[in-house]
Image (cartoon, rainbow, N blue to C red):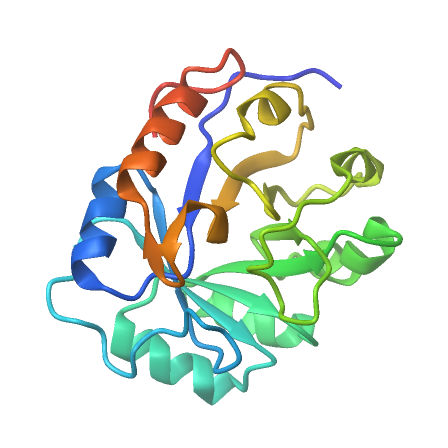
Length: 219
């Protein structure tokens, strides 16, 4: 497939502290992820901390949520996007899109990706897939997987690359090509502690990533 020059979405997930969120945004993140899953060590506070930046797309991350769960956090955190893990039906995704939310559906990178994504591709109910390392914890494992399996995906919905991406992943990303690849999701491998990101490391990585030949220099 032909690799086109594109703008890469940079999403940083698992944020908790307002000052750290501001530093992550200044480091170059486009999307800021807040986890609303009690099983995560990075679960967001019940109320958003004072001083969150107005800039950047706020993404709420949910595992097996009800529609009302999402609506509550949409209002509390002023979410612009949702990332959904677990057993999620296309109808819920469609209703969220109708509310004007960007919908990201996490898909474990295993098995037949076209079969797993087909119900959502056919109904055009999601905006992005996020292909992540299979884990009972629904992400945040810091472990990667064989990215070559993503070349079997032929759907029209773009995807974010996730799972074990860290400061040493630049060479891997340089050599990864897929026409539907839209961005990356960064989390545990850029942490000083769970939920506390290393903004300096993120800044260096993002600047280097955006200078790669297949990347756009503009966020």
